[in-house]
Length: 92
Image (cartoon, rainbow, N blue to C red; front, side, top):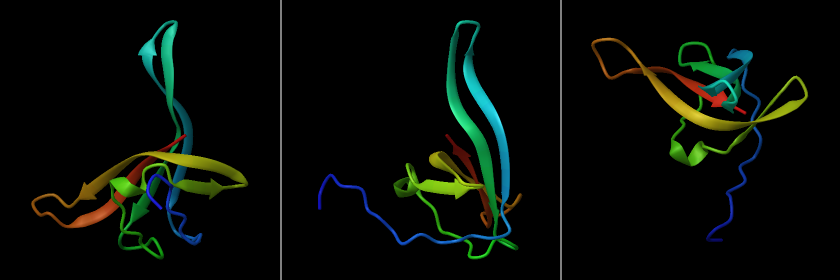
């Protein structure tokens, strides 16, 4: 239905890297929390390797019993080619 988030079936993804670290933007008293961590998916080892796009922003990721929301999705490409070798996701 229009205006409602699409709910996909949860998928367990193995062999990815999760680095939890709080990231802020701004300075002094004008700081804003932008991420609690970064998740890396690598085409050669992540199983299953997802295909992500802007529609996946806001998706939920569960790690060690905590739920995180995808804030950014960056494609990682091979140098000198347009081949995708992974994704970098910032989560909050």
